[in-house]
Structures are given as structure tokens and as C-alpha cells.
Length: 168
Image (tube, rainbow, N blue to C red; front, side):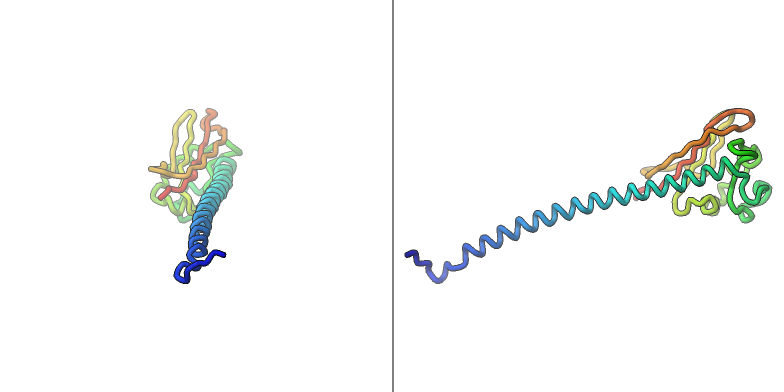
């Protein structure tokens, strides 16, 4: 029979408990970090999807409609309900495109009226002429770009809308 002295009883149990607790904590922190990583990736993918939907809607509205009111280019940003650059579906108006590119002072109001909300935007037309509006992304940003083929002054070109969020 093995006799364990009174002062050594339970030390083996304490050692087993400590090792088991350390293994549990390492596994817990590993699984927690994996969950956080997957959650962050899913959140970023969801935000990118929302940005794409807003960019598609905004660009379609710009290149397919006259805007509201239809003669918004003769007024100021306060009279604008929503911008549209078209004379006809995908045929851009010179007056509307010029007015749109000159609205930099009302940028935050303009992006709200475009339905972009908290995101920033940069619009460009490349074709017979090059026209830009909005703010070009500076620094690290999540960017979604959508394009449409359009006609402007008899030339076929590309209207591009970049919707983005600056990363912190």
C-alpha cells in the first residue's frame, strides 16, 4: 500500500487542473479570434454589397433620368431633389453635366440627394471630353466602382461612379 504524506495530497489534482485550464484558455482565445476575424470579413463584405447597390442606383439615376426637377441645372443645390444628367436615356446633357461638375460647394447635400448617404463619391466621364465631379478618394479606402456606356456630344464614352468609405 502506498501512503501519501498529509502535506502532499491534492498536488497532482492541482497540477492537472492548472494544465487543463491553460489548454481551455488557449483554445478559447484561438476560437474567439477566429470568430472575430470571420465576423469582420462578413461585415466588410456586407458593407461592400450595400455600397454596390447604392452606386448602381445612383449611376443609373444620373445617366438615365433628367433629374428632379427636370431643369435643376438652372437652379442651385437647394432646389435640387435628385440629379440626373440625361437628355434621353444614356445621352448626357452638356448643361446638366457642367452644372453637376460645378456643385463642389454643395458636396454633402449632393451626395445625400444622390442616395449615397454616409459614403463619398467621385464621378467621371471619359470620352470626347473628360468631366469629373465629387471627391477623389485620398488614402486607404474601400471603393466600389460602377460604369455605364453613355453618349455625350455625339461621342460614346464611359460614365464611372466610385462610391467609397475612407478607412481609419
